[in-house]
Image 1 (cartoon, rainbow over the protein chains, first blue to last red):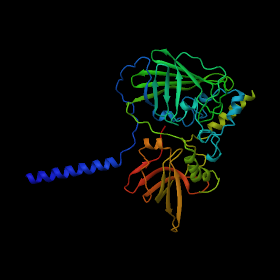
Image 2 (image 1 turned 90 degrees about the vertical axis):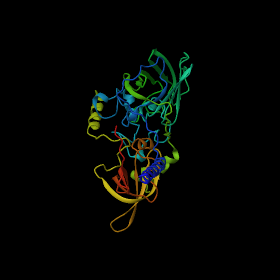
Image 3 (image 1 turned 135 degrees about the vertical axis):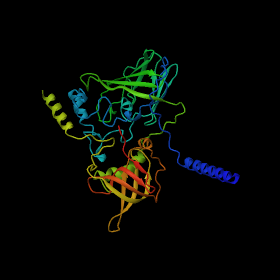
Image 4 (image 1 turned 120 degrees about the vertical axis):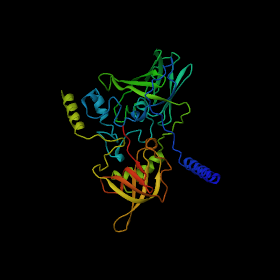
Length: 276
Length: 125
């Protein structure tokens, strides 16, 4: 009886040891926590800090989630004639106006910075927000870049030197809504993956609304009278779920050398530009 | 009036074209799916696309060097793949949507490993 128990225990122990080793060898990279149905705790005041994940809704392959370039009339952006003219010089490698991979002039494909507002409107992934007394930092997974939003009451500079990510100032509209204005954006950036254009006069408004302890919503409005006859909403309450504070955000970096290797093996041959 | 006409024309053009997935299908023949049995030679885990290189013997015994892309590492992690999913020498069956120009290049639909496990290659939006 005792001998049987000993054999059983030893077998169990051995199985446990093997299983532990196997698990250690195949530990998967950390994945974001999905939303649950549980009623969440209330929102803290004046606080959008945390690690926030939008799930697959942030990828936005056809353009912004609320204004994709998909041919539907309600998603037709209100271009001015100049807007349409500049749009047609942008050759994306995805979507309804797609060219072959070897023929695209999408700056982000060549590892130029996404800039604003595209950092919100394409490949928006796990996003971290830190608040200090003078400003708010927003840290993005794609490109591993950060933006600074000044909350010290300053105005955006007059006649600013253009920046890929522009100049941002922010203030609290109410206890749970943080509004950011960005301008002075370099004209080389595309508004989105579809290649919507903007001028130096572009102003982007972001509203970050803390819905409850675990939910943040982002609304993005594009305002550029040179390219669009009226402002349009690119994102309407895109929801982010709060991740645990120990969540490790992946790198997602455009490396010119990796892109060159991709082009050599796949992109150029597929586009008839030379073989493997 | 002219702008309205242009806008209408563009709308009709857009509506008649099917939706594409995340990483542009312009070069891909999406009507074909080939199941290719082969041996992994390289697993390239990088932006903008990961890609798997594998050798396939055709029916005459000649080796064809295939390369098939997936989405980027962040997407693939969410689908359960990793930089360790393959190593040279692994026996795999790769289901591929090939490119239109007939070269041994394409996009991964799924990969079946030697132990029977299937890794799905498509992101759902």
